[in-house]
Length: 133
Ligand SMILES: [Zn+2]
Ligand SMILES: [Zn+2]
Image (cartoon, rainbow, N blue to C red; front, side, top):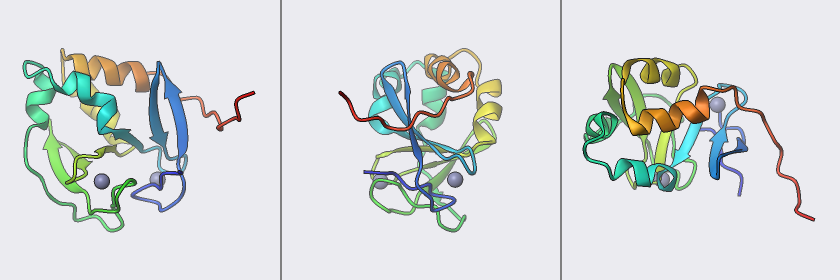
């Protein structure tokens, strides 16, 4: 199933990073992270990034900002002055292309941030899904 970008309404690329799959929009450079991909990290209550994430959001004011998994309207919440969008049903997190670098630069020492830096610090290389032999 191809995930659709909440901003652009176009299909996203599935990228693989260290056993983790993320959906990447080539048009706006936004990234969707499924909840399961961050789950292990988000269980760490001592992580500064996780404490910032633990907030209830308000419905996003942006148009066409729907969860790629369930089409629910995403909820906005602020992390370190950067606005992220989260599925109210807990499917995952949306990072706009220009949000993530700001967020990572400001979030300091955090396992979750180190994980995200690992993924996004390097320019993602787009791989189309190839059938396995
Ligand atoms: Zn997009
Ligand atoms: Zn959802």
